Image (cartoon, rainbow over the protein chains, first blue to last red):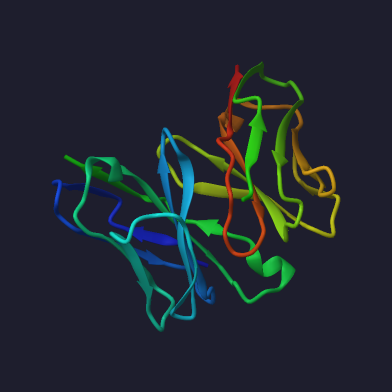
Amino acid sequence: KAGVTQTPRYLIKTRGQQVTLSCSPISGHRSVSWYQQTPGQGLQFLFEYFSETQRNKGNFPGRFSGRQFSNSRSEMNVSTLELGDSALYLCASSQGTGGSLDTEAFFGQGTRLTVV
Amino acid sequence: KQEVTQIPAALSVPEGENLVLNCSFTDSAIYNLQWFRQDPGKGLTSLLLIQSSQREQTSGRLNASLDKSSGRSTLYIAASQPGDSATYLCAPLPSYQLTFGKGTKLSVIP
């Protein structure tokens, strides 16, 4: 069974540009969450999607957005990039249907974004 | 707002030692709690999931306990090996949003 796949693995962008990151969850998983990891702030929750609907959102500016497609694949977009957006962006998938074991999260390898 | 603290922040032990990593959280209304390991520059690998109704969960040399009422979880690693060197993160799960501590960076010296 394939794991969570994130593309691309590495990105270098210039301030002011926008970027789109992609996440393909484990087959059968309908929940996809996104996290930002920086040395200073650690892992912070961005948002969570289930069946194409955003269910939860973290405390990030509106420049950070996401969406989920009918096949559960998800994308996140960051517009008007700032130097502080440089981070490892991780996505996690789970079944998300509410059962106690359905919440176990599996993470991808992440996308390393560098803003210069 | 859930806050998670992991102690110690870093730990260095000789190979073969048993060790305990601690995790405390402020909101006991959690659904589950997961322990992860992260190697430098990589994603998170799920180690153990403890459901809120459980007190303990075991996988190989790993044993995790959960005391919801006191807001504590511990990860016990038996007979540590150099391959165990990584950052260990705990994450209580109130809904579908994991809240992470800063982790414990473990170094196992051969």
